Image (tube, rainbow, N blue to C red; front, side, top):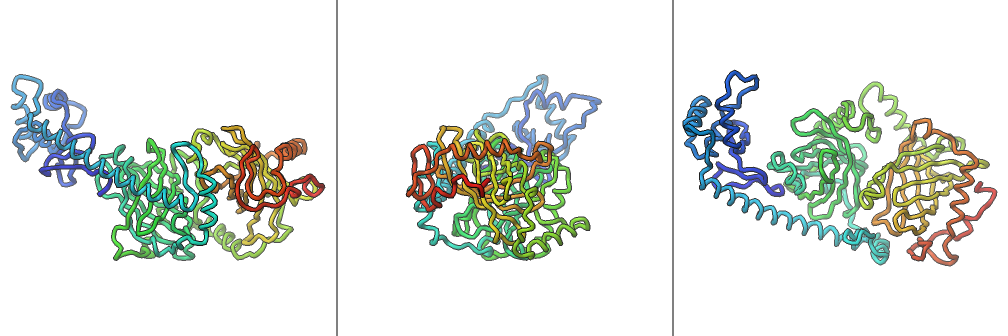
Length: 523
């Protein structure tokens, strides 16, 4: 059962949380009761330019007002007019008003039971994540404790490995917020079917039917139970042609269960859901034809005018068109190109501003992260071996300093960096580590680890192609970055790990302070 399904006691009258209704016609169309004055206007209007209601509509209204039903539209309208008599109003029988109250009570009872079940699921997930050190205290709007962080590091070798075959099946979905907001669309079973990519298993695809919206998801395959998998999805509103594109998360929690979120501008709030395997006996990847159909639908959505974006999304597998064949060959060649050569490291490849997408920060600090996040990069002017950057991640603003990893593979350039920053809410100063991987075509991905984040921040970035985004950082501006970086005091020598420079200590092992000293090489 999905969340709170419509309830009935006689299979004639139903209640869905909004209205009591009657189902009529081959498609079981729902007809709630309309006000008797409006019904009278419909029955008495003549030569109207508006199309008249169907026979099923009038037969349903007869049931709502306690009139014995007939089988034709003409007879139904005649019976209704006779019931009005000389007046312009009909009274609903007390029996039906009482039935409506009973159905409301039953629906609310089932809703409370479903919410209790969902809370138990969520509490179990939170306990599991707390054990791994990735919980978040929503009541205090603060991060998980450092004790939990330590537990995460200590427990890293005891994670339960997750194989693609473990989640390749169909799930029955419970999404209470959708049931409350769109009861007319979510009375049937909601579902999510997942299947790994048949080439490498590095990614998986999924087809979801969430009532008001349906579509295809594309995601990197998680490796352990409890790991957060962030996906992109494309789909359409039920019965509409408008296409949507957004993101979401999945966490596989074992025993054939999962939980997750799905974002869509159509929703009044982010949709949180849980799922359970529908039929374990038929568990397994979908057929090659079905998987190809999912991919084709995902790509076709990209070709359609997606209303709220106005541009096409590149973070998907190449389209199977003649124009994309060259791009596919280039990507394949890049995968097998081996280590990047030093001569391929061009300063122009990294200079400029990137627009950043960091879902975990947006989830934890929606107010601070409601504006556009950014990262502006500039290689050092003398040697080009070091990379400096200024970042604005909403809750944190600061400077990064990194050095390119010459052993990077797959043609991607990798940079590990240190950062120092100011927290925008409490005013404290922090430092930590992170990484950047430049993927080509103006795209990057990376991490930033901070002691007060609920999880390590994973982010993606796209180069801002505007004139302002491509503007080279001046020597004066770069000097200001370096000065700001050095003005934030280094952690005391001899202390390991992340350090809250305003007084807190973290855990771990970082290089000694000499690495951040001013030198000719870093300039």
